[in-house]
Image (cartoon, rainbow, N blue to C red; front, side, top):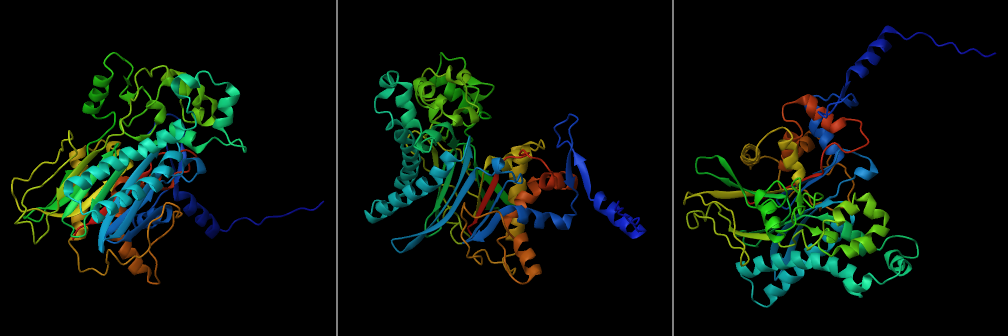
Length: 484
């Protein structure tokens, strides 16, 4: 018999083992109950490097960006998408940015991120070529592009069933099955897109950087940051929130369906969906026959959490709107603010705006923040109200903008963001100290750093390193466009 003898650990080895264990702790993530998960305790100087390690972030042409989902399981991968593009049109450069927050699956948001920006660019190019561009016409083209994107999703599905609502009831199960799946037994993408959705938040800045447009459908946020003559920074939310947390939105749905008690249940559309306006979610925009005869035959229907309980509440669709709100704003710069002391806005006919004026004071617009609702959730989960986190965002942005002569330059990173790029470090170079400084000047990174726990290092550490197989926070994407 062979006997393996292990020598006892040395005192030094025992100390090392204790030190390693001391770096870990357990948490209930604030959920209560007996279950606990392990996380690694981080020091303050370790937090930003860890954020950079597990996020996709960068700096491009005056736009700081980060997109973040710390749960690394395949099923939990982020459904947020974003775009930062410069368009050279008619010899001049326009800046387009967008966030698309998907829900249900990746199918709709992946379609939208490819289709909608290209649609806006083509229409803008045509408008400029025809010489018909004006602030109002550009507001209209953004408005129409969002609706047309949603119509494209619906029409591609309906083309599979040209028999219409009445005819689909007469089709056999085999006929429907042949259209639902291809030869590889994979559900047709046009059908998959009916069971998921996406919000859309777009911004467009003209070549002179004097005109800003923001178009919104859903519950992402657009916040304009302006510098007061006294040196403070003032936030101004430009976008309406289209979800069940907005009483006006819930009332709008109830007014459209006055005899349907279950059009809103527990502040959700039909008791299912939180956003009240979205691209996709086509099952909420069509008669119930399409759900019962087609969608219920797919695996994706059940995976999305749909059921007859929700389908039975469909009586007079649509319940989710595809009509965006568009805002146009005259940007005030250091040189022009005396000439344009007030905010100028326009919106499509019948669409108001909620932008407050600043009573003629000489404000300077310095940045535009776009974010998915994941950023908002991180604050509201800590019982921080909107007026407070908006002020915090403005102060953080202003703090970094106060140092324009630092080695960091917003346009110094040529790498373009791409939704296919894996989560990795985007700040490169041989000088690690320089890279750390450059990362610290990424406003989006700094905003996320505060959002995941602020001064509570225990909460921050848990949010970044907890060992869980299911997501513990929503996907979070932040874009900050600098106007200085």
